[in-house]
Length: 267
Length: 250
Image 1 (cartoon, rainbow over the protein chains, first blue to last red):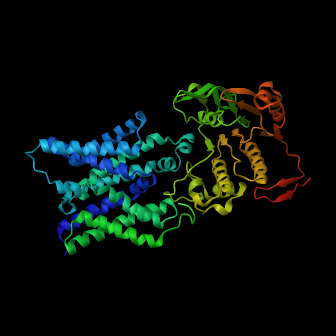
Image 2: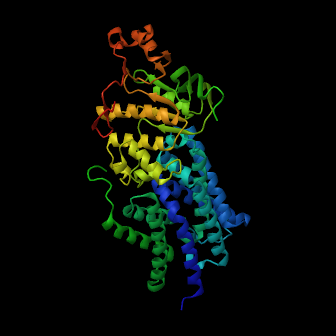
Image 3: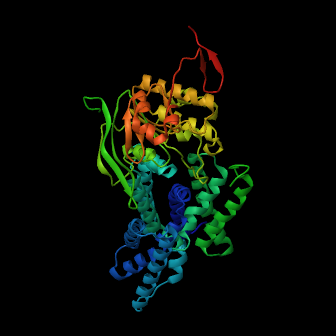
């Protein structure tokens, strides 16, 4: 028989994979991997905020990550720095500020490892509700903005010329990304959440020749990673978050054998 | 949605300043339903910029742009598809609108590309891609069609067929067309109005007016300017888009 904590972990993991699948595809298509990382790093600041003010952790992480995302959009317009330099600047400075604040709060005991790598086995019923309700909202919004978001991903100017308002939908997508990080930070931690977004989508890219197919494969890949990873961690007693990501990596490696050729000559 | 004069877009004294340099300035033009406007001019004269102003792609412009339609289709000069994105012609056709399968099929049919429907977008040649871009624009049944050098990369017979197609679109959809010519001296015969750009409007009018205009002759030299060859379609045969030739009936 499976223990309750294990069933809760499975439920949370499955809920997460359903959302990271489609979002991860957009992260890969739009080359936002490092952007996801930056948001995740800034989440540490959100976590410390929730400890000091005692507001819900997912909410405070969501607020801080959204603010960092908006600062980034502003900086991109104002400065001449390339996007990756700005991302590095924000990622490391928000991480540093988060650590400084932790230092100031010496009286509060932090489980830093749990924060960095998550602890999916420690989730409670409340966390399940946050992931499933939050996840459902993210998926519904994504479904609504799918067409204009996809159009602006393929070609920004074309989308704008034909009235799809790409700037607005890009901003909404950024908020969705902050939201998935917020609801899953407790489960996989801030160092591994981007892996959950990218690895199943990268695996799916190898197997797909159209966007819808890639989304479906990405969801399946995420679900398999969660299930295999959790059972593996139970059987061989490995940390659960890293086991999930490792399972995803193994699926990715397997998918390399079935790669859909892009082009024989270039790339 | 058009106003009573059938105007779709109106530019008044429009210009764009980027990095302290005017890409184009003082452009006034009006695109009406069922009319074709052709932009000509040397490289860097602001043809594409003018098209983008018309489409509302610039946030800060000088002058005024009034748009009376939102049923717009755009065929850009070039478009890069990232290889991280798996996308077939069929998916691309539905990019900014939701089309029925038969609408997609018939648009691909008239541009001579039905066999490409399930091909990966990145596997197409330049000419094929140009036709698919055109098919996507037609399938949207726009009121305003902006074509930025739509015949580039298409072979000569295909070029004539594409001009025929543009004429047919203008007739059947009765949409306004803004066409950027890839060649200074080529303007299709059905053009109602030519605007010659050189950072500003050098001259404008009917194709014949422009060809005889002194400023146009000054800009491009008297001898060369004579070549302003208006495409006349008085052949006794039709060039199909796939390159085959068909005898005309009568």
